[in-house]
Image (cartoon, rainbow, N blue to C red):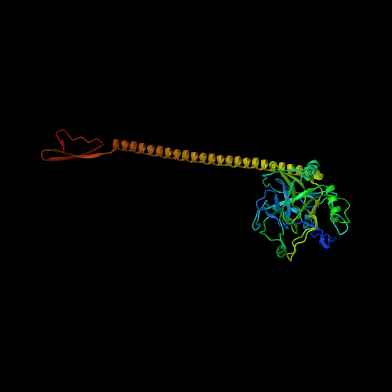
Length: 393
């Protein structure tokens, strides 16, 4: 298992081997989108990965895709700064919400294909920075379940983004293209071997036969633009994930001229079964759990810090209000004291004046006029009294 945060530069991978089938030539190429499919706008698990590739939303922060999808990213840059996905099922990515990819896990056994080497374990587990709500439960199909699906000819679905016809070659990264769904049948490795023996379509460089899905024009087939979408069987409201779209043979592949060519027996997509990579998924789930725990701890620390800050601000406000009250009380007390002192001084001054006036009244001489008949006399004294026989005029 490799955990990747910086990944290699994008290089389109095309397998160049041509296989002759009934005088018709078909190229083997990376699977990328759905031709002749059904509109699947709003699907809860179909993920458009930036760069016009696809993925499958396995859980709220885990997307399963093809490992070769990661070739489009630059090894020298942090993954989170360049890689993102959109919300599932959207048909228009213009101004749509982008959820960063923080890391990716691929198997140590992953091998990219060449003209002489078979793709091996072409799967990657992407870990997102934030949650995407999951409304449909997904489980990884076990080997027993996959064999049952194949034997019972259960319908396999795959929903992807990308080119849907030759005209899309003009604008392969169309931002308003809806996801498309194809239908097919799951084949076990033995059934794949029987198919290749019947139609003589097995690529000669293959070292091992994997699981596959058989498709046709009626139910939709993979086309350029959709590597990384997931094959699944839906039972009892649960989607059982069987494998990742990434490689195919005998597809019309959205020919620019609009012509249609398919291999005898139907087009084939092949993949390593997802149950082989439960350890990767478990590792991703552990990383997500740790990621969420750290986020909870951060939120708790932020909550405690916010509460502490609020308490400190409240305490500072209360202290400021107390100080202001104390200063106001002190000012009021000082003003009261000053008034009392002023009143006391005024009362003392009034009393002193009154006492001075009273004292002055005791020593002040007063002149009065006294008369007796026509005779007048003036008398000046502190308490003047008319002479005997005179009356005060």
